[in-house]
Image (cartoon, rainbow over all chains, first blue to last red; front, side):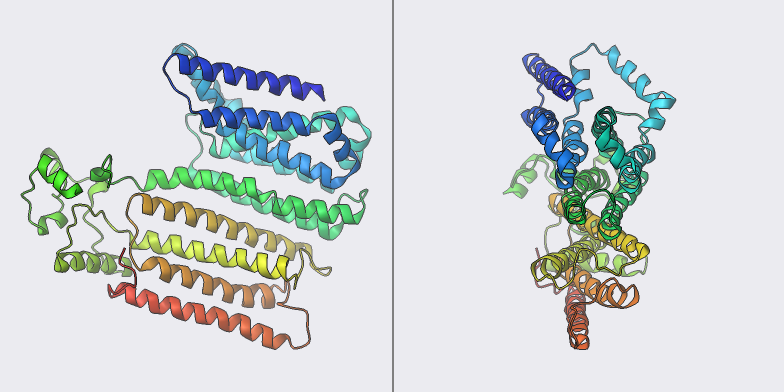
Length: 251
Length: 219
C-alpha cells in the first residue's frame, strides 16, 4: 500500500508549499487549514500502512476502524482544508475561470452531485457488507487495494458535495444537500444495525460483527454530525445576518 | 459606552417610536425604500407576530434603548430550543439507558429489519436536530437575535415531548424495545411517561411567562 504514502505524502507537501508561497506573497492562508490537511493526509498514510492493514485483514473491528478513518474522518479534513481555493490563490487569475469551467462540465457536475456521491459512498458499503464482496476482498489483494482507494475518493467526493468550501458554481440547494445527508446518515445507521442483527458479512464471527457494527454506528456518526454542523452553519450564516449597526462594534 | 461612541459619531434625532416605523438606523437615502431585510416586524394575528409586538411594546414602555437591540426572533429561538431539547433528551436516553445502565441493547434478537430501519432513521433525525438546533442557537446569540424566555420554555417542551414520543411511539407502537425487561413493566412505563408530562407542564408554564413578558431571564 505504498501508493497511498506516495500520493498523500506528495499532496501534503504540495499543500504545504502552496501555503508557504501564499504567505510569502502576503495572501495569508490559515495555519489550521495546513494542519488539517497535513494531519488528514498523514492519517490516511498511517491507516494504510502494512501493520494497520494486517490488523484490518485479520479482524473486522480493525477493518471498521480503518474504514472510519480513511473513508469518513480524513476525507472531511482534506475537503475542509479547501485545497482548490489554496491552489487558485497560487496560480494566475485566468486559471480561476478554467476551474469554474471544469467543475461546470456536465460529467463533473453529475459526479459531484450529492446524490451520486451518496450512492457511491453508502451504496458501495451496502454492496460490500451485504453481499459476498467482503469475502472476495479478503481473497484478492488487487480488489482490496481498489476498494480502499474507493473508500478514500468516495469519502472526499461526499464531503465536497455536501459542504465543501471550495468555489463551485450552481451547487444544488441547501435543502437538497441536507436531505441527502440525512438519508445517507440514516442508511449508515440502519446498515450497521442490520449487520449486527442479521450477521453480515456472514464469513466473520458474530462477536466481531457486533463490535464492528457498534463502532460503525457510534463512531461513524461523529464525522457525519460534524458534516451536518458545517452545512447548518452555512445555512444559518446566510439566513441570520449580523445586524447592520452591530458590525465592528465591540462591547 | 457604546451608545456614547455612536452618539458622538452620529447625533440621533429620531424619537423612540421612530425606531419601529422603519426609518430607524437606516441611511437617509434608503428611507422609504422597502427591502426584505428591513421589515418592521410581523403584522399578522398569529402567535409569533403578537409575541413580537408585545416585546416591542415592553421595550417602549420600559424605555429600553433599542438602538443596540436588533429584532428578537421568537420563532427561531423557540425552534432552536425545541430542537436542542429533543436532541439532548435523545442523547441522554441513549447514554444513560442504553449504555450506562444497559437496560436495553444495541439490537434485540427479535427486531425486524423495518423496525431497525425506523430506529436508524429516528436516531439520525435526533442527531440532526441536535446539530441544527445548536448551530441556529449559536447564530442567534452571535447576532443578538435570541428572544428571552423562549429558550428554557422550548428546551423543556422539546425534552418532554420527546420523552412522551419515545415512551408511546417507540416503546409501545413500534415495539423497538421496552424501558426495562422486568415483570412490573407498567410502573416503569408510567414513570417514563409521567416524567415527560412533567417536563411538558414546566415548559408550558415557562412559555406562558415568556409570552406575558415575564420571562425568568430577561437577557
